[in-house]
Image (cartoon, rainbow, N blue to C red; front, side, top):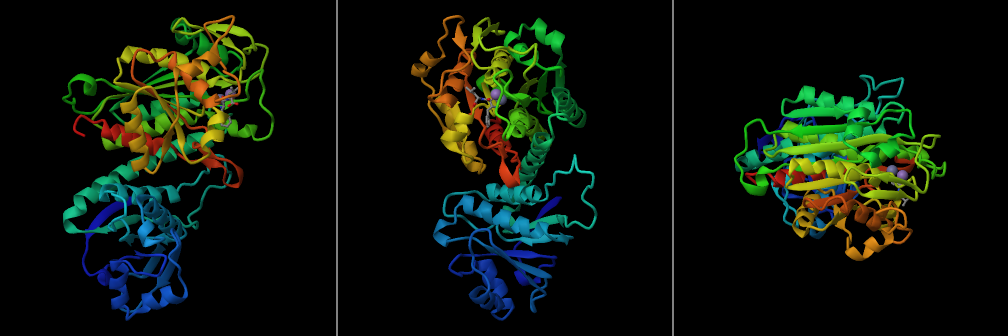
Amino acid sequence: MEFSTQSTVSLHRIKSAALAVGVYADGTLTPEAQALDRASQGLITEVVKQDFRGTAGATLTLHRIEGITARRVVLVGLGKAEEYTAAAHAKAERGLAAALSQLSLADAASTLAALPTTNASTLRSRASQAAQAAINAGYRYDATLSKKDDKKTPSGPKKLTLIVARNEAAEAQRGLAEGAAIANGMALTRTLGNLPGNICTPTYLADQAKQLANTYDSIKVQVLERKQIEALKMGSFLSVAKGSAEPPRFIVLHYKPAKAVKAKGKAAQPIVLVGKGITFDAGGISLKPAATMDEMKYDMGGAASVLGTFRAIAELGLEREVVGLIPSCENLPSGTANKPGDVVTSMAGLTIEILNTDAEGRLVLCDALTYAERFKPAAVIDIATLTGACVVALGHVNSGLFSTDDELAQSLLDAGRAAQDPAWRMPLEEAYQEQLKSNFADLANIGGPPAGSVTAACFLSRFTQAYSWAHLDIAGTAWRGGKDKGSTGRPVPLLVHYLLSQQASA
Ligand code: BES
Ligand code: MN
Ligand code: ZN
């Protein structure tokens, strides 16, 4: 999909297959809708009075209005004017994108991004939302369907033009480019998540990483196989992998800006992203119940978000060094699988008593977190579908954010808010460590039912003493279950926003 900007002229003379304008919930027209209303002798007012309520995200498409050059006018509901926040704007963009995706158009023009919101949002971020909504609405999963989308299925507009003031065109273009890169990264994340476990194996994820390195000169990749993982003494990660016939992979991605960035101190050090890459989690010997177990193909959502984020930052040419680490394997029950009570030795040398083989995410992540030390990182952020308890605590709205570093936590919370991909900070105090005590090892891999997502984070924190670290539990946000089952592409928007804010020039 192509994106461009055009400066505000007489709206009624814009040549386009569709032109979108906003209408508030009480029927008040935005200035842009008013302009079209005047050009059409009050037609818009009449329609809004009779046929359209401007609830947020609602749309109505009008055809061939006399006095208006665009072949269609799409009215887009904005909700109440006093509640027209950045989130409401994003919802309106999604509504518009959904309506346009039902048509096949050469082009569409929209005035929505230019409209200010009640909370301070930038045109750059609104343009980004417009591009994301447009690309996300066109996303289709068909990798394992025998019939692919044919030419007859509507594919939305080929081109989207934002109508903005002339002196704001550059800012809008910047936002469109960021939004497109984020959405392209999300599409990769979504497809990897949606692919079944028998296709999306650790080896498949490694091949996807190699493909990114082939596409982008700025990305290098190294894939460690079992022998090399053994040499690193990743005894905790390997203990999970040994229950499956599918070989494990430890994927190392390295993004380096094309031109060396001039930076001093922390800004010169890389940011490390660590993604949980369990391509199927049956629970191991502590087997999960059958209902919805299929959804555990999404247990590589952290890994998929790292790959999606790398795609996005490479497309944008981010000016900051980033390392991606993906420990990937399956968690299955078998004669060679971990057993409750087993004690394993992690790469860090800490021994771990495995009281529940279904708490495998932390077992693979802890060795990756130890491996991260060698990069002398400015910050390490792990992303994991780690606990059902996090879904209980925060539902499907916020990702869980855990960090002992207040500054890092605040940057991530700000990034999530700006990206419309929110996280909520959870506690991470010494007092919870008590629950991880074991009589037979340095620590246990579970802390009992209370505060399950917190003790999981506490476990990880024991391996992150060498650097500043944050953990995102995306168990509730990486995918949706039920009728609309599918990957969401989160938290790629949060991660890309965060990395953009950490550029030397930012
Ligand atoms: N991948 C799961 C977490 C999960 C479960 C995410 C359900 C989304 C929905 C993880 O490996 C797991 O099984 N965690 C256990 C931990 C428990 C045994 C301490 C859980 O949450 O039940
Ligand atoms: Mn599990
Ligand atoms: Zn898991």
